[in-house]
Each structure stands twice: as structure tokens, then as C-alpha cells.
Image (tube, rainbow, N blue to C red):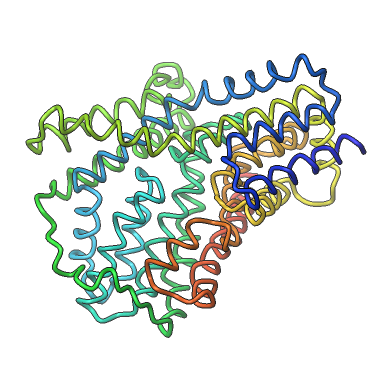
Length: 436
């Protein structure tokens, strides 16, 4: 009982440090890990080594993949490919189907782009459409931002799903395929369907009064933009499907199905198709990676800190106890994983923090229950998106960009994120029943 109480105290301390004291997350994780180690009886002399091992083990397998994902997404954004994807979908589907076009845009652009980048990049486009069509801004924005959010929480190569895949020893390709199956119906219900109830909310986006006049500039072609942005999904999905259908191909396709090799190849292709082929110089193309590294550094630090806390749980033996306790509860393991992430999300705020923190808690549950680890990644991802509120930066970005009251932000943004979390879990459970 004392060990489990120690885990709760450590997570509670982490919550206080991040949410109330505003301590930098890496420092908060390390302090919480040290306190947990002392409470759990880890010898003081071993604590630094345990923390270093946790940070090294988790970052060692993830850092390059996440960094490559960041610079790939940065090139998609800087080249104008993301904007071309949006304008192509809107032109193809027509003004009457703007919510559908924006839903697809958010999801497609959200696969290579990190959430905050996609938000800042595409919000001006939303206001351009608002002033052209006269439609309510919130009702147009929610479908697009739902797509960005779902990709951020469910799909590799985003940091939280990648960290979860590593923690529970899931398969990146299968997680991606299952994630697409779960994401599409969740996206439809929480995006355009839910947005139909938001037409009465009026936004006052003063900073974008002239957004409609903003020039698009020289953009890459539609096929080039779509093909390059979706290349990681195509490669990982295709190789996974082939190896599932023909197991004898697993060895020959091992290199192409490796996430590190996939992201490296996709970035190399993007450098050519969205860089050199568009007349950009080497210096211009290589300017993006430096900026992307600065943007991704805080997320890497969060993952590093989560690795330290997780390793303390493993070294102390409490991880095994926690897994046995959770497995004995009369609640399905996938629901438990979702619930753990949801509670951490509500307490701490950022979805990435919620996902990677939950990973250390649900890892022993996966081992003790025998649940499909790929589905656990998705269940935790859905839980990590639940109930965004005042301790989440996304909540405030949406409120301030759209000039909304707190009430309307809760009614639109928070409810959308909650629906994503609930429907995500429902479709994960349905998929679990189907694949049995």
C-alpha cells in the first residue's frame, strides 16, 4: 500500500510543480522522480544513475525519429505545401462543403505538422474563408482543429504516440493503421457534425480583419504537396499491410518499415520535391531544421523527464505491483489506460505531457493484461486529449485567436476535445472487439 501511495504522491507533486508552481517540465519530472525514488526505498547513491538510465533509454530510441518528424513538418509548412493542400481541398469541394474541406485539411496537414505549428499556419486561412463566405468562424474552425488534434494525439510521428509505442512495445506501423481506422469516424463526429451546433457562437478575431487580402505566394503543386506530406503514412502503412498479409516479406521489408528509416527517407524526398525542385537554395532549405530543433526541444525534454519517472517505477518494483493492481480492477485495460491519461490531462494540461506520463503507468498493465499494445497507445492518446481547459495552452490559443468568452471557449473548444477523447475510446473498444 505504501508503494502505491508513493506513486500517487509523486504524480501529485508533479502536478503541483507544473500546474501551480509553473516549474519547467523536465525539472518537475526529475524532482518528482527523485522524491518517488526516496519514498520507494531506492538507495540514494543509485538515484542519479536510475534517472540517467530512464532519460537515456527513452530518448535514445525516440530522439532522432521525433527530430526528423519536426524538420519534415517544418519543410511542409515553410514550402507552402500545407497551404496548397488546404486551398486545393477547398477549391475541389466547393464553398458549400467548406466544413468537410477544412476537416480533411486539418487531418492531412496534422499528420506531418505538430499541433501548434499547424494551428498558427492555418488559422489565418480560416479567417480568410470567414470573410469570403460570411460563415461563423468557430463553426469553420472546429472541424479543422479537430483534425489537427486527432493527428497530434493518435498518430505517429507525433511525440506522444511515438513515446507510447516505445513504452508499451507496440508496432509503429500497426499503430498508425489502427489509428487511421479510429481517427476517421472520431473526426467526423467531433468535427463537422459537432460544428453544426456552434453556428450561434460569434467570434471577434480583430487581429485578422485583413486576412482575406493576404497573398498566397508561390506554392508547390497540389499533387506534390499531398504526395510528400502523406509519404510517411503511405510507406509505414503499406509495409505494415504487406508484412501482415505476407509474413515472409517481413525480413526484406525490415529497413523500409523501420520508422527511423521512413522519416529519413521522407525528409530526403521532401528536400528535393519541396526544396530544390521549387527553386530554393541549399541555404534556404537547411534553414528550417535549425528552427525546428528549437521548436521541438521542449517536447524532447518532457519525454526525457517522463523516462526518468518511469525508470524509478521500474527499478523500485512498483511498476509490477501497479500493473497487477490495475489488471485486477473490474474495468477493461483499455478503459483504464484511457482513464489514467484523462486524469493526468485534466491535472497537468498539455496532451503530450499527459500521454508520456501515462506511458510509465500503463506499461505494466499492458504486460499483465495481455491487451494489444497498439490499441493501448490509441486509448491513452484519446484520454490525453480529454477536457482541455484553463491549464492547456491550446485552450488559450483558441480563445484569444477567436476573441471568445470563457463560456464560449468551453462550449466549443473544450467540448470538442472531450468528444474526441470519448469517441476515440469508443472506436478503440469497437476495433478491439473486431480484431478480437
